[in-house]
Image 1 (cartoon, helix red, strand yellow):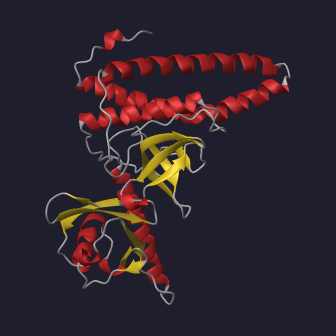
Image 2: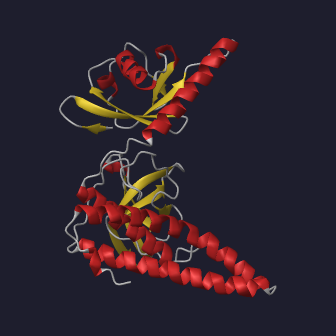
Image 3: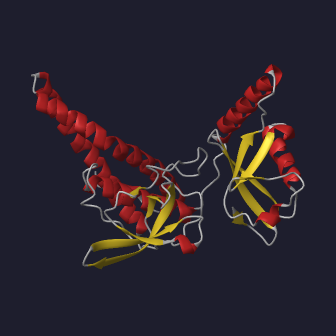
Length: 308
């Protein structure tokens, strides 16, 4: 939840169907009034709406501000065990309405401001470089940067989006200071950079369907942003390197494919390994290129400087 003014707040209400519904309202309204807003957006009857916060069912006559809500709300269908067949049909309609809302949300991408678009590209580039640098099944070559977005498993086993705030090296190795996005600073912690609890951003957490950028982007505003000079020129160089990487990878795959046709089992196994390890890299490079083309259209950067 983000504060946008003194009393105006924006809720991100998550459903069990994986949909995030943003709702902006006053923090002084009742839960019943909030349900009315959800009805206006989704068409789901109020009597079928049930809002849960930190495992507690919110009652209609309670006020939003009373709970000091700092995280998302959960929306579930309010169905009783003794309900009959017509009520189950209503439940089906409830789920169908949510799916329609999700499909419609795909066509309503908000526009991302240029600084955040550049940051999304820079962060995606950091993740791509890390994936290319290391073997997908090893953490030895990992080189996380301050400010980099990552997925981290917290102390109770839940994967959360997070950010590297600082790095520190001692006799035991390199450690990174992790801040969990959307959570108070008291939950920040030091983690070994090679720990399996740290994974590439959006490899364990989910990206909402209507994000403004194709590159992975956090739900919550990042705590810090690293400003780099000549960022567009650096992104241009990255784009060229990524295209060369894909060309080289395709070339090697064709060579291995020809060898594999001759019955070489080692070549076939190598092709499978390349496919498995390169899939996430190619996906992120594709997203990078989509956002990079948008960044070029917004800037005075000269694309003729591409060295292909």
